[in-house]
Length: 348
Image (tube, rainbow, N blue to C red; front, side, top):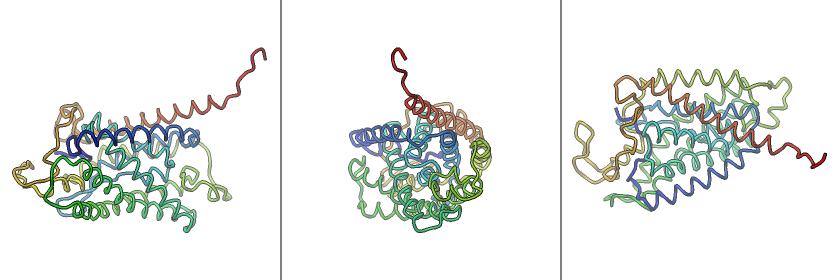
């Protein structure tokens, strides 16, 4: 079963992929610097959890149309829980792990995927949440409603990032116009955004009811309320990690096997045989190239291609993204703490 979810090698040509790769590297570097001002002893472990949870939920493709599925992108959810700078890093960690370990999303297309989901999705999601919380009550319910709306908008706009990229460097000359491609991507991804919004709203509302201080978007007045709970983030992180492991290790077996909104769009215009191979027509997927690590141990979210191992691969992915996300966050946190130490005068 092919459950690849992101842009493959060859869909967008080399020069444009390189440009977006450089944009992605520059933006991530900027976020690393800005994240130093946000990360503290509570936010750092939350970064690892958010990365792991997004990885897990991205495995749960849900049907949105006949023969088309969708999955969470995670930008709005990450921005709401850990802020825009750390949120970009969390989603980027997921995309890097998926590309390098699970052969999901081409290596040359990694910058494209990071731009659409980690940068565009997170930025739009955060701006929407902050704007909505100026109108809504800064409560668990208010944050949940805000992230729901932000998810729908951010997923839809992130889909247009792909349209722009294909317009600049598509690998196949299409017989359908870019206006139609844009409309198809927007329509499908608005439905996906609704599914993502429900997941994000349920997650944010749950965390906000238990520990509003762990919801970045609720910093301020809501945290100063009488009786507000503070302290270690460990109980929430442990509970969230257990939930992520259960989703990736168990619920993933019930995920839809239909191509997601992006893959379905890249196949639009082509004729497929029963094995899903292109046998005629013209479509974006005709320029797709094999993944560099397509024969890897965990490629295609399974162990050496063995059927029924998606859950095991999911558990490994959750633990790996948690470890990488936590490691990056703690490294930034330590450097911030080290920089804050007063220097000792010579001879003092």
